[in-house]
Image (cartoon, rainbow, N blue to C red):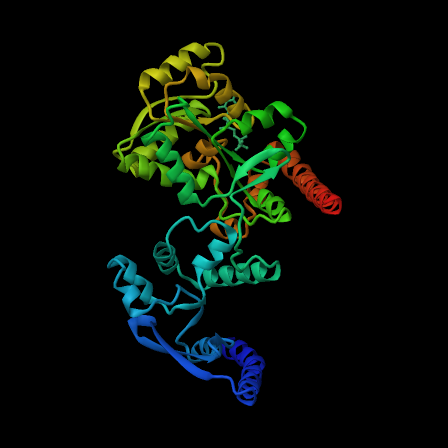
Length: 416
Ligand code: UDP
């Protein structure tokens, strides 16, 4: 397979490079060979040559030659130079147990908007779970990303975009976590409690015709785009989302920060059984995380004041509300002025996922941005309408919004 693939690619690439060189010689342009070195399997140094014409690189045939020779695999960690490898920890050097790749798992995750860890950590995860089937999965995902044009990172992103009248923030996961932590560490003197929300296609369908829900979300400090539907809607408006910022991926990263900075957390929502499982898991994964308190999402329906005093008496820094959208955003809006916490986040079904009550989609499905398919299979009765009717409806509404925007832009241009 390796020989066949690299031979086919090189047969296309080499004549093109030869022609480009001949044309450069004819036009008396400067041609030179740029040589660099990276570390291969077992930290063996590998020379990499690039032909440059007037300081522009021609097609990278040397990578394919190295792939043919076995110095590179198709999928593998990113190539690192000697000086870059000196920054790695001892554990992270295990990345050299496999050959670097033409395509890296980090690139694939970044294209899906889920590269929430650093490249060395994602490389290490790959090395720890490497198998023929994992390589096949990643190769197929890369092929699909290339076909639909999402494999290359897009630049020129806007900081916000409008979804049916709600402003969403286009930030990376680490930026979003920084904002939540800043709101705890340096609370805004004008706002007692900072409010954060996630919006997916289902939320979009909810607020499409619901002005009060839109108003509530627009009053939040930050609203983050969650899922492939919102990503597609953003792209239709010329906004390339930096990452898929969802509560389930944010939760463990946020817990790490809360634990490291000695900040406390209150958990509100889901059933008592789910909360108990969640607490057990948290105590194992984050033994020094200060869980100031917890309340399930059903027991205080008739005693809202008691719930508020429990939360306020806990003196928690951050409150997570897991009642599902839009119930949780309405609860946050109604109770915000009575809360003493520095920040509050609506997190939907997060507690069900993290506790293990509802299983999360396998990694390859998340890399394909198809987590919703798993949720549909897990809870077909509850989610059938949401996904099978809701997703096409959301897409149709997004297309209509982007067409309407284009029409009004053209009319504005004609008018000026
Ligand atoms: N829930 C709750 N109280 C209620 C209704 C719902 O605590 O009165 C919880 C429910 O147990 C579940 C979560 O809210 O844990 C809703 O999850 P869902 O997956 O529907 O939310 P989404 O992520 O889709 O917004």
